Length: 570
Ligand code: ATP
Ligand code: MG
Image 1 (tube, rainbow, N blue to C red):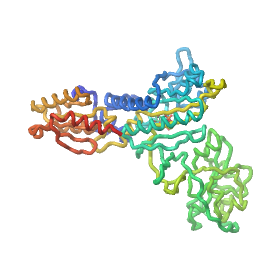
Image 2: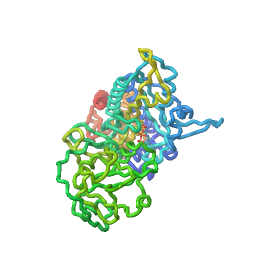
Image 3: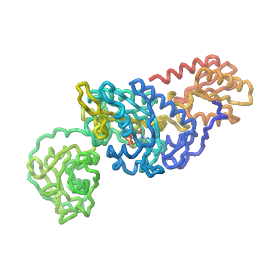
Image 4: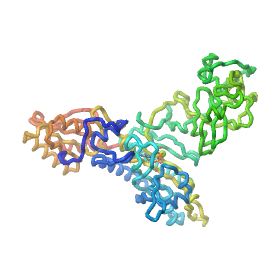
């Protein structure tokens, strides 16, 4: 490719519409343009990288036995009504009608579609297992599209679905995909971590998210500094640490004026916040419930909602709670009747705790659940694990990092095969539901995540495997025939050798060319200048570390081939 012909409109200014670095750099490097909120055109440089990521994915899916197909983006409402998701998917689903007023959607995902295809074709255990995948455009009318390709409304996803005869088969498919995902993200040059993830309403251990570690990430990851434990903050948790038995003291009531928060109570009484138990009122599908948690902990509403199995969970407002002497800031569990009380697992093993007295002006000291001072209806892990806590698996400590979810793998078990009647006949002649898994990778999000991890003040630093081009040749002065002739000759030679190279043949100053080369992020820059050429050499600069070296013109091709090979190895 000649730079003079290339459609890569680079920008000097940082566009106002972009908040995070990958979005800014993709706009500046002439890779991306916005069409509407969350809807983008991938310009040629971006499209080359997208293709490379897709091909890495294809190779790794195929290596595990995956077969590629392509389902339509347009899906009839009927299959979603059959699975029960037409009603629950909500505003995120992009719904359309055809000229006959029939309902369709633009697929946000394809479980329904693949299940209905599969059930029409598969009858026998002999046809299992199967792994089918596609790389295709998905539509989700996100509430807050943002960060460019990171959270867009039209995006490219690879989605694979596994079909097995039983749970043991699913475990095998899941492990194959876990391994394939690790290889895909390693080959893309990402620093990532697979973390245990929320498997939603299905429950049980059965999902991992692959997180690219980056400050711009929307997810929080908790991981151990010693072992390989890692989980999203949504599900990370641990059993309460053992507590030394203490003498249970007599309950005491103390006035605590103007102490509406745990911090104020702790300060007023001169104790640490972990001596206090917080009493929180929630409305779960409209019904009041009380949740108790240690004063220094945060209630994890995702865990709480999963436990309660409700659609809507909100903190109760003051007006709902404040009846009689009840006052927010002075609430407690002692003497409460008629409201269900849930407690985080740490609460029942605490001794001599401080709680509100429910009279609007005081707190109770030395309250002990173990003595029967108050009632708990259900105990569960209902809080966030915090940085610095002891790891649930070992003696290490928990650290926190931010991550970009680039992929997720998921055991579906028989959720969709039950709903959509995807069955097979076993060796024994019995009919059984197919056991399924689903596995997604965001292709555009992966490209953005690579940039979030690999850039500097001058621009993008592409890992070799996903760079739009592998190298650029820059003659420093296009009025010197010897330089341009060498540049042309190398361009022809390298291109013929299959190296993806750009020749910057534009009538521009060298400084402009260098700036664009750094911005676009070519892994290798080959500069042809009079001084080094007099020695028979070209100057090679590595984008990833700025290292410069001179390579004889005659050896450049061999040098590049070796360097590219070395950079692509994982
Ligand atoms: P998120 O929690 O970020 O909304 P999700 O869990 O809903 O994502 P999945 O259904 O697991 O997403 O989709 C598989 C992959 O598709 C994700 O891991 C992510 O890489 C990508 N993806 C999902 N939503 C978007 C989006 N709006 N824009 C770009 N990529 C997306
Ligand atoms: Mg996900």
